[in-house]
Image (cartoon, rainbow, N blue to C red; front, side, top):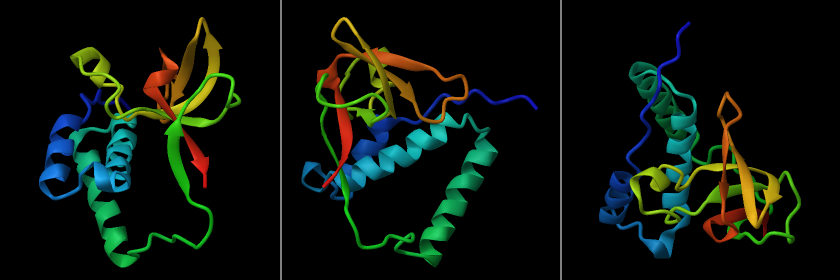
Amino acid sequence: MEKHKSTGSDYAFIERELSAAGYSKNKQQIPDAVAMLFAVLDSQELDPEDRRAAAQLFSSLVEKDGDLGNKAGPRSIWKPFYLGMFSYGVTVRVRTDAYDTPAGSRHNGLTGIFVSAHAGRALVQYHGRRDGSGHEHHPDRLEVLVKQ
């Protein structure tokens, strides 16, 4: 079975739409969650029909179970990432505003695992990439997921 090479989501468009709907920096958790959902879809490299089906199924599940199974307990939040303060294997993401060039901005919002450090840079192995690909980033461009 041949995999479709997804071109990925237009995160600038998604951000503009969320902002127009009233989700601004003051309500960052919602835009972050939406961006992460698109990042997961992008990482699966689905053909357009399968991508639509996955999105529709998710929407249907949300309507049937509005709390998505959330239970009371500790919440996780994104905090600045610093080399030496976090161990390998923690979940990180590239800040949603980390890069503004076309080549760099395709990394914005992607999540992954911190796998190594070299010359002051952190190697992130992105979630959902079948080939195990990742990218090196300056720590200032990353955030780490921590429990509150």
